[in-house]
Image (cartoon, rainbow, N blue to C red; front, side):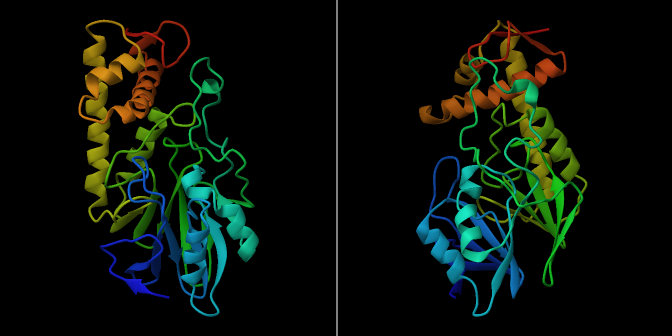
Amino acid sequence: MNATDKNDPQPGRVDRPEEGLRRILAPNPSPMTYLGTNTYIVGEGRVALIDPGPDDPAHMAAILGALAPGETISHIVCTHSHIDHTALAPALHQATGAPLVAFGDSTAGRREDLVGLQGLGGGEGVHRDFAPHELLGDGDTLHGDGWSLNAIWTPGHMGNHICLAWGDALFSGDHVMGWATSMVSPPDGDLGAFMDSLRKLEPRTDRVFYSAHGDPINAPQDRVRELLTHRQGREAEIRATLGRDAATPRALAQRIYTDIPTGLIGAATRNVLAHLIDLTDRNLAEPEGEHGLETHYSLR
């Protein structure tokens, strides 16, 4: 086992952000995953593994190689079931016998009223066959060998998303990250739930958030407030633009997101759609028909 500088993550290397915690960065960098997925090992001896990551043989070898002689994985815990978090979970379960633990499968906690809407599509990156062996509901605690993880249900990025409290640290998954805002992509993402989940985390006093992508967040309460303010600002931009004339999510994204690469406009469009659905839920906007990427929306 080779543990090195926690401030310079490299794929496959074992970093120790603090005592009792190991991090292995998966080799899956992208515009949506930043440097890659952070897989965490909690404890010593019989350990918990958080977010196995992509189905990659090198990452699998790095995880198993991070274990000291005689160590075993007792639980494989997933913050949510996007494939960059869970694709390796079945193989890791087969290799270790450890149960997969999560809030639920990929349909758990999602808004059924949005599923199947014409033109909406969605589900990019969702692990549709994800099937946990044990469920960890809001407020439930998973106990292990000298460690415990308390689940906080934080839907929004995905319906089955949970954060995990470990002492005065929190594994925040994709809900709170330091390098970027979270993607909220209907039908699996829900902006109203995302904002409620941020408000649920806001009064906490955690020392640090360990997100699934990027560096630790050492001022987590400030970051939560920053994300709330960012989303409120984006809503104001959308409402101001709609105040001039009705528009589709795609047209709004092109007008508002003027500082991003063109390849990310699709993701921006889905974020705008999430805002429009939330505005409709709050009787502040109205679609001309059912929700969709090409639907025209206007202010009420």
